[in-house]
Image 1 (cartoon, helix red, strand yellow):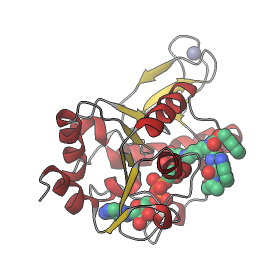
Image 2 (cartoon, helix red, strand yellow; image 1 turned 180 degrees about the horizontal axis):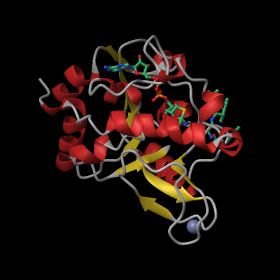
Image 3 (cartoon, protein in one colour; image 1 turned 135 degrees about the horizontal axis):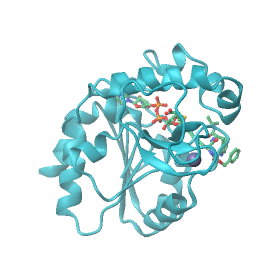
Length: 223
Ligand code: BJW
Ligand code: ZN
């Protein structure tokens, strides 16, 4: 399974693009790039603090819960999520790659140590308890490579899966935007659940339009 911000929209977490999307009020290049962090780490941390405060109040919805249940029922299941909110883990998912990182983790810009941090708000500017360097969100920003172990794991899962379901992603951010075609070329059946058509809809076997929280739980009770 591949998920994006649309699955958490039903929990009240804003998506990135679209009418109510996060990028409506903030320019991605001002906030979600290494250059932005170098230029103004305080501004970037303030944005993350605002999102941490918001996400801390949100709960997994029926779609997150159904995916965790599918993992329990299926011997060979893997979830690839672009979401950084941690709601899949909160719902009980364990077999997953968080390919864009996790908003509840921080990474030291000096010694590179990664740690869990659930402070809301986090102190600005946060510093590493080991070496004193500036901490950054453990998130993959534009222009940064995904973590090698995640790419490897996703590539293996996509090439050997029988079915890939793509849920709640606009399909414009690479490399995740290419995952449906990787699975399709390897012979998988590819399905999509989204409120709207996406650039991948044309190559997908079945495209269902609707809310993730309404449609994903139906996978648990096939007719
Ligand atoms: C519902 C619903 C409901 C709503 N039910 N559905 C190849 C070609 C062109 C460019 C590139 C390329 N390869 C790499 C790039 C550059 C770049 C990129 O892709 N740019 C494009 C925008 C053109 N990619 C990268 O930089 C990546 N790095 C990389 O590839 O390194 C190597 C490299 C670098 C440079 C050049 C070449 C190679 C890294 C990408 C990191 C993305 N990070 C972000 C932000 C992190 C900040 C943070 O979160 O704090 O991750 S971007 C943002 O978009 C976030 C998301 O995970 C990601 C995807 O968004 P998503 O999940 O799809 O959300 P939305 O809002 O777009 O869509 C929501 C969808 O849900 C919509 O379709 C709705 O209809 C639907 N929906 N409610 C069901 N209830
Ligand atoms: Zn450090």
